[in-house]
Image: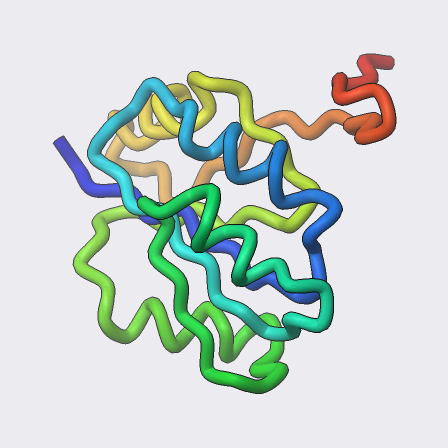
Length: 129
């Protein structure tokens, strides 16, 4: 069973963290690690993650490291087989990772992505068009 790392570079994203990280933790695929790279913490997002999601690995360089470098500091040391970067406002369905991995059963596939929908955070529900 391949190991999957879900990675988010968190930049003052507290307003999204409760729903987004809970959705990541609700994945049906279990050989995963979830990582938050803190790249701005003026809203106390790091503290919220540490208190409410203790299984999430937090990397905090102590400054705004930026999007690319924030991911790269994790990639350099990770032993994951697959990486899924997720933005601060991305709510994954529970089967997201499990379904994404099916694409890699074809050896010609080098990358896959899911369908994205807008999420209404004020109503805590997806908006389907």
